Image (cartoon, rainbow, N blue to C red; front, side):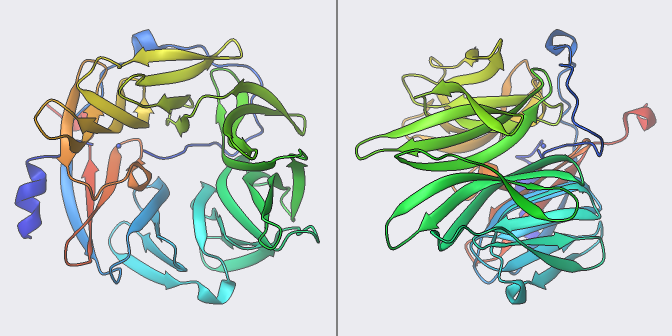
Length: 362
């Protein structure tokens, strides 16, 4: 393929959420960042082309390189990779436009989005579940899913009332049988939740969202504990990024304050200050603190360029340059990295890199 020559010269990559099918751990994990080895870059690259009808791949999810799901942005279309081929699924009959995908295994995958339905895949077929709907709301947006067992799955989002222009943040829980409302933010202002995940180093289930008033948007970071939200941080615009080793990081990016942050002793603290770097980094997706990928706006030349970088704890190496890659489209597995490139002809090039088995190397 003609794209192979180009991408082989610019690649080296990895991301995805990881969870175990067992009860939530309560004891924090010892932080061993100092003992982590720099991430490898000796990938073997493969390329597939998907005809998505001009639509972009908005999100990947997978637990294994032999079972990867891709969401086509703002459509009721999914693609699934079985390790050999990609297959297209039209899920229009289920009335779900997936905004997020999550599972505890290849046979327990959830798709939620813009309706009061949750779509479940058991490894063979789809089944639709109903989400509770308060009578005062007529719409919903589900933005994040996380869980640590098939009967302990959480989804966060926002109830909407389009006529009255009001919203209320909500957390749902699946108990193995049905979805129930676990928590709502009942405030005088509008509210929204967009991410949930567990940081195993602080042993906290973290939730990110916003409160809105007539003049301000107020970012919030919470700990979800015993059915309630405990505020950890307020007022700083940032985004949450889970790594495969269980650490949740935060990104706050501007040319005057470019920081990677983490939770420490119940506070949001700066992990890495990159304010003086020539690259404005946005996002952090990968395996651990010395093996991750980030998008960056490179100011080292006359014109700013958007690049995809890999960090191995020692340096940042450019992987890809262009405006057609989003951090939401990156997927990292223990030995694999996948990302989409949206081509000018409307098709999508799926780039898959695999690290050779280190035990087989001479």
